[in-house]
Structure formats: structure tokens, C-alpha cells
Image 1 (cartoon, one colour):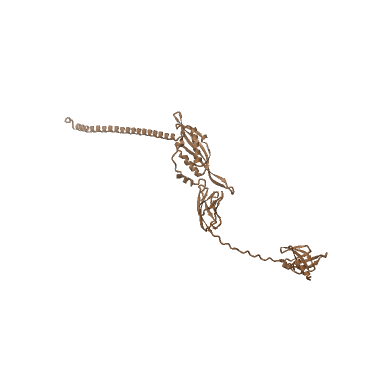
Image 2 (tube, rainbow, N blue to C red):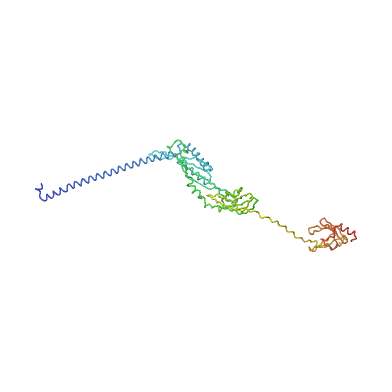
Length: 435
């Protein structure tokens, strides 16, 4: 066939014969490639549809499980029964488990609101929300116990708001307010009841969780002062440290705290003396430790603790030592003799006897130390040296004086501390010839 072709035709036929298979091969490859990648894209799309279907089914299963979980932890749809159970449970954990005082729990009068969503044009009820308000009082430690007990119940409920304020009483001294350690507590609770939950159930016993560790978070909470500056640590001391054997005695303890309004309580923890007792009046920062009489001397110790009522409460322990010694022998001291008092009678002289205008006799007595003179008629008196001197009679050269009930005679010119003698003695001397 190539013999009858010219050279040009043979070249052209050769070119066509060479390129035609290549073109067919290229076309085949292109067609195969397009079909392959289109198939791969379709496979990827199908895999995506499968994964989405799996996710939808997984989500549906997860939603079903969560729905079942929520149904089990929902309040029963019978709200009257739910409120009665819930009220009884709240009262128990507040008053019995936490030891607080419940002022009011209005679960029986709580409000409920239905929550709906639209499915097309039709509203569908989903759940009812129940609100409960609680008012109570107690310490911060009791509040922690209450919160622990509250969340032990694995119910669809939560505390939506919590209000805490310290309770103070008016103390002495400029109307100071003294913290009592008690708190006024108010909180609101929100609980959920699903429309497809159980009609009735003993949810308190069914949904109680295992014990929650109370100490895991109470230390952090109770060691935090939520009402003001940090609480100061109190101190305790004693000034009296030395006593004597054979007689009972008292140790006086004094507590102190930089927080002036804190109440301080002193306790006796240990004592080396048997029978020692501590007493403290309410509100007083002092205490007394009564110790019975000890027969032996020595050094003894007691251990005490002082605690305040701040937030949080702080305390200090201290060992106080005291000595008991034998009493020193008593030295009997002689009373000093009183100094002799000066007698003015030594300087009192009977100067003489004179007559007044009427002719009556007058005894003239002069006291030089006092610078006084007495002119006495019979029956008149004067005071000298804490004695009463009364003129009884006047004779020619003698006078008789009554000195505090005792009659004494004096010659003219003699001193009052040198009487002649009693009246009887004077009469006797007269009988013997004396003037």
C-alpha cells in the first residue's frame, strides 16, 4: 500500500498511524480519570452521609440517656406530693443534721412556672420550675453542713441566691455591738419537675448520693473571714504566781484580744493540782482558778485555752506556772510604848483666894503652859488634862477639888499634880494640930 504513495503521503500516513493510538490512549485515560474521581467524590459524599447519620443516631441515643437521667432526678409530676416530701427533707437537714433554727420554709406555698417550646405551631410543655424560699439562723459551720447535706441529694435543684448577715447584740460600754457568732441566712431554691417524670416517687431516698467529703472544702471556707478584716488571735496571762501552803488560793487569769467586741472564753485544760476549778462570768475577760489548800510546797502548772467568737474563731493555749512556798514565820513585834503625854496639872498653881465685890470667896488657879487663869466659885468647874476639876470648898489656906469623882485638897501655892491628900487625910491632919 505504501508503494503507490508518494514520499509525502507515506510520511503523512506514518504520522497518522503513529499519533492515532496515542490520541486514543489519551482519550481513554482522560475518560477513566474523570469517572474515577467522580466515583471517589460520590464515595466521600456517601461516607459523610453515613457519619452524619451515625452522629444523629448517637446524639439521639445520648439525648435519650440524658432525658432518662433527668427524668430520674426530676421532681415527680405530682407537685403536691413533691412539695410535701421536699418540705420535710429541708426541715430535717436544717434542724436535725445541721442543728440550725428554721424560721420559715415555704415549699408548701412555692410558685411554679411551666416552660414550653414550639413544635411547629403547637406549644409543648417541657418542665415546671418550682421556687422555694428558706429563712434560718445558725453558725457558719452549720451553714457548711447544710450546704453539704443539700447537695447530697442528686436532684435537679440548686440554690439560686444566698444571703448571709451576722447577728449582733448590744453590749456594755458606749452601746458597742458584740457579735454572737450566729448568722441570719436566707436562700432561694429552684427545682425542676419534668412533664414526663414519674407521677410519684420517694425521691429523697432514691436520689441520695454517697457521702461527700465534708473536710475537703470546709477548711478553706471556715478559715475565711467573710464579714470584715482578719480575726486576731486572743491571748491569756496571769499576774499572781506565788502562794503559801496550808491555805486555799485563787489564780487570776486575764484574756485579751485586739478585737474589742469579741467575747473571750477561758477553759482549764490540764492541772497538776487535783481539785482546781475555773470560773468565769459571761462577758467578762477575766477568770479565776480556785486551788485547794496544798500541804507541800513546789512549782505547779496548769494549761488553759482562750477562744474568741470571731470569724473564724481563733484560740490560744498557754501553760501557766505558779509557786507554793511555806509561809515565813511570823515575827511578833512588841507594840511601842506610848509616849508619855505632858500633864498641864504640873504647871497649874493655886495662886490664892480672893473675894469679889459681893464678898464671895474665889479660888484663883493659873495654868502657865496654857497661859490661862481660872477664877472659880464653889461649884464651878474647868477641863484640864482630860479631867474635870470642880471646886468643892474654900478654907482659910486650903481648897478642895473634885477631880473626876475623887476629892483632893491643896494648899495655896501648890500645883494641881501635888495634892495634900484626900479629904479624910486632911481632916486627920487637922485633928493632929495642923492648920
